[in-house]
Length: 209
Image (cartoon, rainbow, N blue to C red; front, side, top):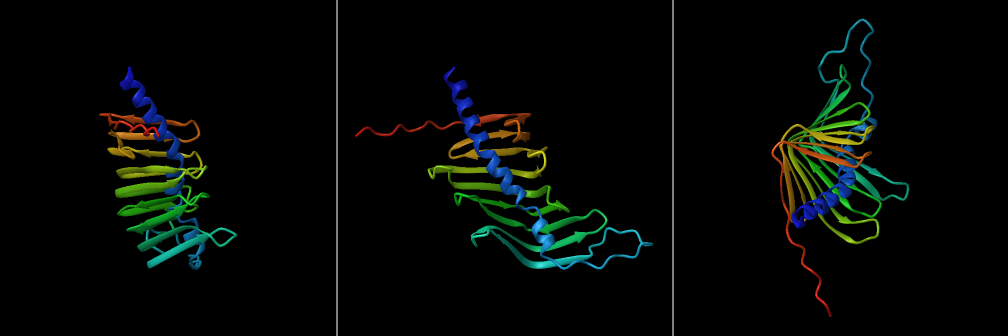
């Protein structure tokens, strides 16, 4: 019973911080990138779009700021290509840094990322790692939160984060693993499927003075 309660508490701690991870991944969406690049010439009405890039970027960095001038996010990549037939942006070696209101940092990296035109869906492929560390809303330090998988798919409108690949979730020294993951931020439901296992480290009680 104690072990079951321990798993429950650790699961609750994971679901509390997953919304921050989810929003961090969605900040990889290329909405701001698309707005920062020149508009490509429109193809003639007689010619249907092909899956050839109409513009590309190399060695780019795009930053966004709030009205006070504080940086909210930064997106770097070695290359980015826009495909007009699908209105998608493909980014090689993406690295995103996103700060929330308390200054907590979320970092997302992967071998490749694909975003749809408005950034409402972001897919991370190959060695996808999303980490978050910093303070909570009350300014208290929080353990590092990390998600690792070969594939992560984030949906902004429905606030979901999914993968059909093996995934590892860490918060501090606690670790959960599964063959797939489905997280619904609106319903606050996290599902790990397949071969699921968890490792919980004992908490050290504060010394009495």
